[in-house]
Length: 388
Image 1 (cartoon, rainbow, N blue to C red):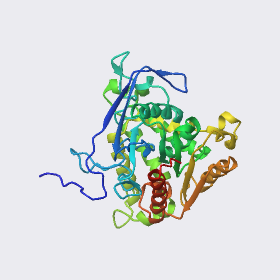
Image 2: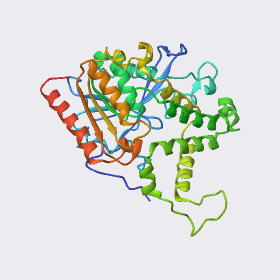
Image 3: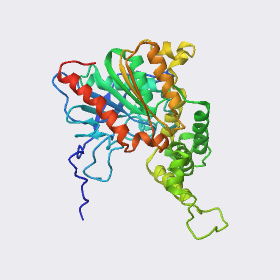
Image 4: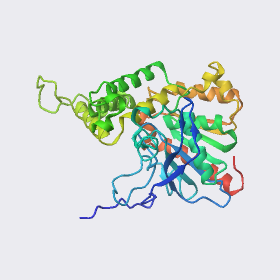
């Protein structure tokens, strides 16, 4: 029986990933060099004649280039931000040319730890270098050059994607007109770094990890990945959201006095962990969480965030969510203050939403209408020949 396609007038429909291969070496912040690499990406909508309507969407930890639409051979695989990107959606692909990229170090087709190292003919594994947000921006710049995009109308992202949007405004101030920074932070808190370290240790201590070279052993550190995902998932949700969704509901009528699943929330976390371990690469998880830890644009400026943003020329939309305790509204307000200190044009919204950090991925009328209104203004600017 043929799978039913999720045909909808506000969906971009079936999409096909593209691959860009770069042969010029890329020097990373760590001083390591990638001799060549490839980036997998998708595009939605049409680039206008002036090439002024391009929007780069940067992905968060476990997402990818697959931002919107579905694949013909897997129609259930909807893009991770399909509720945000598409015809008539807040980021309207009838008006904008949208690009999603899987970053280097990823596990969805771009060059990463599971890719073949041309020097050895074997997967990079543990030898793949640690990457940073700055490295991702540098690689994204090369793809923009390849596509003939000198200046993005907007660079947009949530969570780790928001950090990339911020880094674009610092490293490439002339090439981004607007930065849309959702559920972001100027750097991780100590508590967030601690959560990431516990998750990494769950992976590293898995007997199937083999010091990162598990490919050669034909194993996958599934136990570690499951635990890492469970830890992360708890931090993405608010206490109220978890209580509303699961409460203290038992799987049976009473306690069963064992250490298997008793509560519905335990079942949910185990399911999320199992699913994650089936498709995500452990070495990629280590590197992406490290990139999160290392992001700190103020570090080069003695901890002064205002000075870090002195080079920025973009206008900004900064959005936070009241129940997000991982990247709290206070962290977004730090960004806003630093930008205002530099007399940048900033719109800030604090959305009252109960869902925690994951709110940036979910349907919320106030949030989506805010983003829609911002992009409608950009579309009007473009139609009148204005680019910022």
